[in-house]
Length: 472
Ligand SMILES: Nc1ncnc2c1ncn2[C@@H]1O[C@H](COP(=O)(O)OP(=O)(O)OP(=O)(O)O)[C@@H](O)[C@H]1O
Image (cartoon, rainbow, N blue to C red; front, side, top):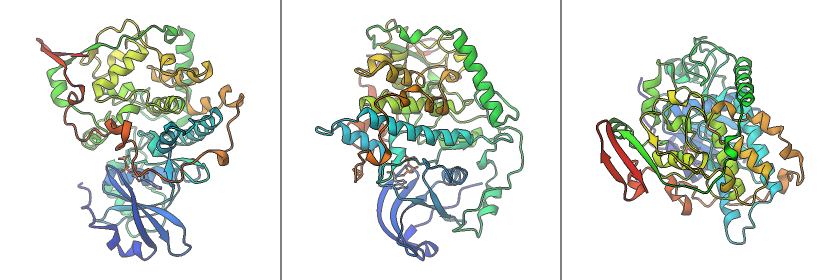
């Protein structure tokens, strides 16, 4: 079923302007425009998010309804959604975000972030992610600009437009049944109705650790625990092997890979989602590249909550260094950067990786001297490095869960996390997030049609099976 046509303007929606005074537009994303507004009944300042994409709106509303009582998740006050119009979500207004905090800290005289501050930001992020994962919700687009912050220092996960819910009774792909959804919300504008009524279904999507069938939350975490125990039993800490960097690598791709996948952008997942439905798999084209887990970059459609944990590791590293950990300019560059740090991706590093859809399509020259996470975190303590390594590791089952990390001794040691009220919160958002400003400019890949444009000169050689690309 086609999504309803877009509304012309939020300003002409009688049901909205009857309750809200719309002030200025405060942001826009790939699928939305966000306005600051005042609720007429009590003068509360809110954010009105007009979502131009049907699936995205559906996902965000559904996830936020489930997560409503979580202190580190943005509050959804109500929503408006009628046939033939864009959904409008009424959210609590949060003035700034973690990307702005990092940017301000990086400025000359910004003073960086103290360890106590970093710990408090991390704890709040972990609480938000833990709430999602306990409810079997994958966020799928965790990044600093999606972590909004209130004036009193409370951090909240936002932008659930790419979220997926792995339900206890099996995974229900909400977008499988838009008709039912329409039925549920018609004439219910302005009220938070639970989106109930989905029939129990068999599992339609993979969890990353099981191909099909019904699995409940406890079972999911039990299996994950077993896998973790197993992998730590024969654990050799390969990441302690630190040498000087060898930053050159060779990627070999088939011709079809280049034609089909020149750009796996965060803005192109919709078509794949449609294709996925009914095939029991998730799309690999989610998230923003710099925070995208290697299983996604290798085309996995059978992944789990662990993709959020990888993103978390990238965010934590950025809190420590105020620089993105893997600022890839294209998907292959993204993988290349990861491999140059973590080392070669093989069965030893990640049992099962050779089964990833694109594993044999994208190959890299052997990296003799991986840089190692330590080198990316200069002047940080062993505990801090260890924390990032627990998340930024190839094998998804080895990644620590949010709950495990919340219990990490790091947070109970000096210097203690500062209270949220003592965090330094920028009182303005620059109006530019990482998609459009300064050192983050490369983040926005929409200008490029090719995975290779951003590299400058690359050496492409045709072979019998495709071609090889030598990256400088
Ligand atoms: N609750 C809110 N309070 C204040 N500003 C908000 C709020 N929600 C979103 N914004 C701002 O609006 C902009 C777009 O929001 P959001 O990222 O949720 O939209 P999107 O279309 O899903 O974006 P993306 O392209 O990142 O997927 C962002 O700059 C964000 O900071």
